[in-house]
Structure formats: structure tokens, C-alpha cells
Length: 150
Image 1 (cartoon, rainbow, N blue to C red):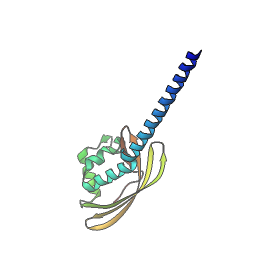
Image 2: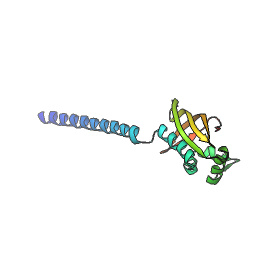
Image 3: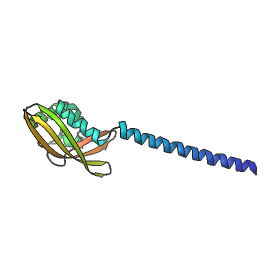
Image 4: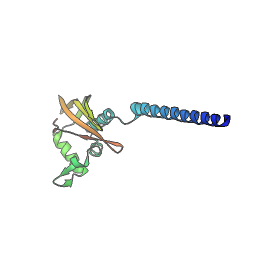
């Protein structure tokens, strides 16, 4: 009988140890993700920094395929870059500040109010945007519920 009690105690102890280790790993992973991982704020900062730096390939990769469709065809990287250049009216964009304000979250969809302080053609400007982010596998995708204008 004593052997059964000892085996039961060992089994309970092992299960409790596994549970504590699993909880510690989960908490550690969550801490790492919030500190160093991919977050919506970091994704937006990367997206708008890419806009300022002329890294249109980064923006293209962060745009959902559905938003790249024009008349049933997917917009090419070059065509995307041309459209961004037209939006900037050919002027050099110098980003001064990016303000990110979380508005709402619904499941994997995150909504942010973005205020861009920038200089375009030597003139200081401010743009206010509503941006939606969602996780697509491991990458964040950025969409504009309303048409952006700079």
C-alpha cells in the first residue's frame, strides 16, 4: 500500500512540476514577444519608416494581396512603387515623427490612429490616418480602411 501512495505522490509531484515549468515557459515567451518580438506598433513603425526611406519593397510585402489587386491583376512591385511616388508627388519625404495611438482590437485585427509629422518638398505637414493591421502567418499586414492622402 505504501508503494502505491509513493507512486501517486511522485506522479502528482511530476505533474505539478511540469505544469509550473510550462507556465514559466509561457510567461517567458510572452515577455520576450512583448519586449523583442513583432508587435503591431513595431510593424507600423517599420512600415512608415520604409515609406520615408523609399523602401517600397518593404511596404509592398506588408500590404495584403487583396489590396494589391487592380482590375483583377496583382500590382507589380514596380507599379506599387510608381503609385507611392505619385502619392508623394515626386518630392522627397522626410519623416520627423510617427505617433501611434491604439484605437481598437478585434481578434487579430488591430486599429491605430497614426499621425505622421513630415516634410514634403521642404514644407512641414501632418497626416492623420486610420490604419488596420492583421497577422498573416508570421507577418503583419497593413491596410487603410479609408484612402490615405499625404
